[in-house]
Length: 111
Image (cartoon, rainbow, N blue to C red; front, side, top):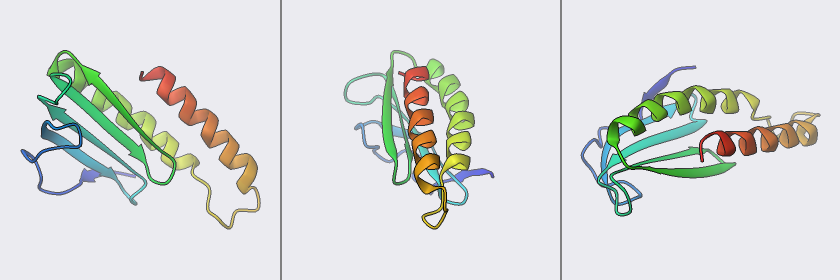
């Protein structure tokens, strides 16, 4: 599944008070990741989310370091999207538990 631009909001203010540099959504609308520069608390910030499951924000001292992490995080976010079970899945509980563990590992990998 591809990552697509979320909207034409480059330059707008992001959730961390910075200027949006990159903002993408995983098709079919499973996740979103946003890179901001000049955030309120740091020179750069990445906010990402897995719809209905988690939101996670990271702060960086340098924009270029954040750009590299942004690309790495997109790969792992796409893997999380693939784990999201359908509400009608007969194995909803065990699959949900597996996803929660994978989300915890993601947050540990990207503190």
